[in-house]
Length: 186
Image (cartoon, rainbow, N blue to C red; front, side, top):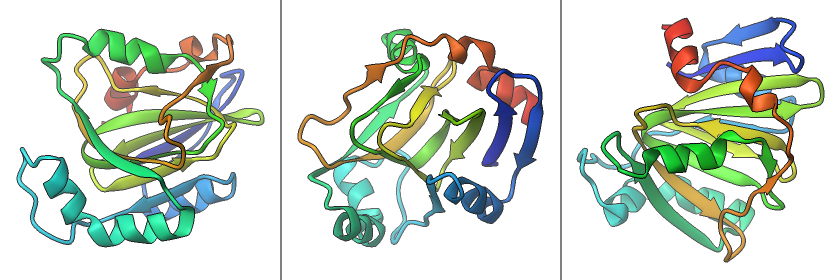
């Protein structure tokens, strides 16, 4: 189940936890973050390739492309048996920003976005069907867990794709990991 858990950025206490997708979307909208829940236009096999995934979500993808002018869209996935899973996980665990906004749609699996906005940390557990758009220059990090399992559609407005600018702040080490968060909300 998708969740939004909000902490003070000094981790002095959890201020709010939401589990309803509409409430999550409304709360995130109040800080400039887009959150939606999509359904496929067509049935999708578990092992669907990039072309099949993009076709299944064609109408939603076209709507976003028309609104934002994305230059490229692709599908990325990571499974627990990937030999580079620890390397990939580590890359995204440090707080960073992007000059462009970061848009991800979870076709399958899940991941935890941490958004550091003003004096709060918004922990957004995204699961199958969730779309999140992190605004440009928003400090954040991402945890996929020790046994990552996700398939995401990524949207880019620049040809360079994902380019992170790391802040050097160790704030990410002070908050529950993906695995700890899943255990707490179960």
